[in-house]
Length: 124
Image (cartoon, rainbow, N blue to C red; front, side, top):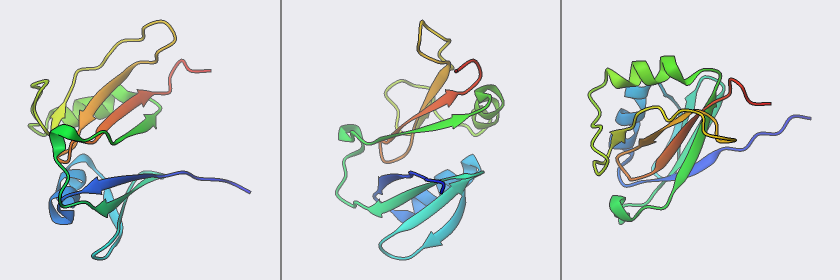
């Protein structure tokens, strides 16, 4: 039997969250007033309403692991997301492999959720 884990993240506004993630290539697989599920390739992420969330105080995070982060980073770089380290949302540069830490890049969504997009190349 297979197993699957998905992140459950906050959204201050489902319409805005959905629009942001659609720009990144996610698709909506389920949505009602209390829950939203978005998919990206074979993965999914779930969102719950959190209208009082303060993005600059968010401690929510998730990881997206892909075979090669470079094409994804290149595609997302064309979307006009801020690269300012204090901006929300923002897209950061690729961080090279450092010791046992794999190559990755951070992405922060409009609700302050930190995504670590991690490169599976070179991981054992």
